[in-house]
Length: 122
Image 1: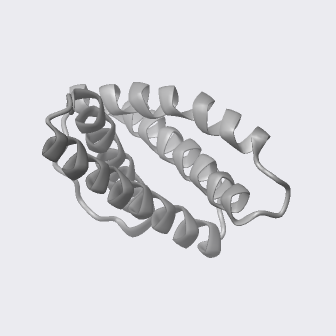
Image 2: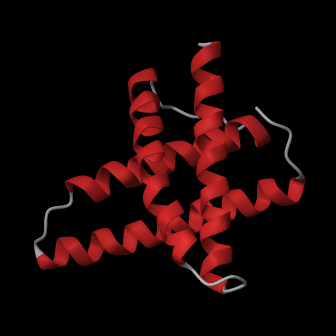
């Protein structure tokens, strides 16, 4: 895993936590409306795993996820990146939205990297 500053670690963890809260709120709204929640549940699980993997690498926190769940999370998180990068490229320079997207991209990339490293070691 690449060496990152403590600031980047903190910002990445906070970014994933924020993304998780956003997905949890979306899940509640979708459930209330009776919409299909399969995709949001899959993404939410992947975000939980990504966060757990970063906390495992950086803060030595244990996680309870199996290889299959971790591999699926890696695919899901990797699949999220193109749409976020696209939104980032359309955002205005210096805007709060651009900063949020930049942090989210970095957090997801680091989570995928942590998962890849974990998978190689196990």
